[in-house]
Amino acid sequence: MKEKKTNNEQVIEKLVALHNLKRPFGSHKKRKLLGRGSGSGHGKTSTRGSKGQTSRAGRHFYLGFEGGQSPLIRKMPKRGFVSNFKKTYQIVNLGDLKKIKEAIVTPQLLKDNGLIRDERALIKVLGNGGIKNPVTIQAHAFSKRASAEIIAAGGKAEIINV
Picture (cartoon, rainbow, N blue to C red):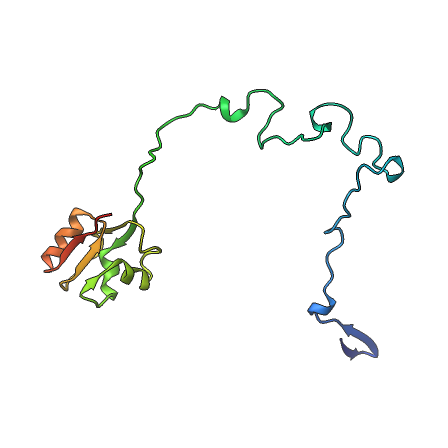
């Protein structure tokens, strides 16, 4: 604790540290003691009310349960189609490859330069930006423009088979 004296008054300034931290009031409530008789304040029905599904033992039911009526999720119309075999690619633009000075660009090299997150996931090279030096690029897919620009610069677009 620090003490400061200003205008003949003593002001105590408390510094926050691990030894003097306190939890905010009301952040921790005492656990309800149930099934301890009527003297506990939670007697007879142990705060469960009387009768019905919620008063019984083993009364767990799933999230979204609506008391036996047809749940909202089953009433809503289902539209469209979602494919189980959809391929999601990590996108790399040709303009982003300018800062890589290597002759062969591999997925590991792309990850090391921060252009993709996972070298094992699918990678697609798009033709945004340009490329001037001949480079061999290894990826799972190339756009038409990207592959045309790579070949025009004297490089190769190698497709990785999964």
